[in-house]
Length: 422
View 1: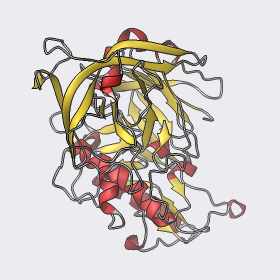
View 2: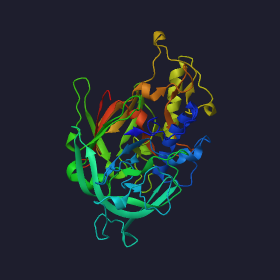
View 3: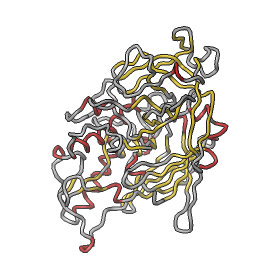
View 4: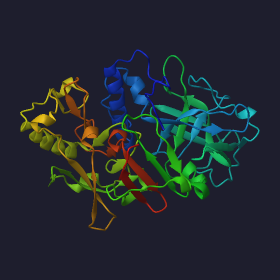
């Protein structure tokens, strides 16, 4: 799991300022929220700074996969997305192509073959040039082409390479309106989907993956590892208890959030705001490392903001003007522990399982909720409201997930977590 702004990838333009980079990361989160709600024509609230570039990049992590058996192996960089099930890359035989350093040489891979339309994975049944085809949209972009089959290889926790044949993926031939990368040459070749569906890697490799994967994002948001199958384990100790809550993996990994508690007081937020709307996903609470920061449905966010403002007023802190900052709530002050000043405690109260009155608490790390984005002495609450005045989906983003290990058990529909130094 490689952050999209990693200097090793050189995806962001070199001339980006710190402010431009910060707005870019914020815009990813807002774009994710609008993607869930399927508001294709809504304004994303994307800042005018390189807005079109930020709009197409709606996911924080990318990864590298290895496809084919030819030498040297083809190892494209692809967007890692838990909200889609389709994996696809641009192929070298593309008729309309986006700028890319290396496209998949399907004709050079002796293990590559086109998929028979009668294959059960050819669903929906799309015919492209006489073979099974696929279509996918991503941001403003659209791709279609062959649904092919080839060998994928992965490195296990012991450092050994394992090969898995007969893996279906999309081979993009007609690709339009993609803006991956920058003017110096794109390195992103497509999308690696970890959602649930017939073409998902999770489904195709279920005998090995067994519906399990785990990751632990480091506090500095550097590269992390995602582990699948039997090696996906989670452990705690007397001080760090592993807790488990219900999850709906078929609905973009929806979690059942009951309430938010600040300084021991449960906020007056209607839990209906976090209930899942399965028809169009205009509401729900989704765990998604693709969003950089947490996004809360507007009504819930305003309630949280008011309580946090009241908390800091006892220190005589005054919030900065909203339109002057990347985040909605910022202060020019610095917390001084020597004066007894601390950030407020914020706990997310999750329903243990649907129909069960029991709850499980997940305390958020204050240093992941509040961060220095104004200047060296100031800080902001690093939680975003949905970009318009209406309510929408809420997302548990990567920054607030840092230093917590998560284990996804797709088959059991459970999410386990434990505090961890990642």
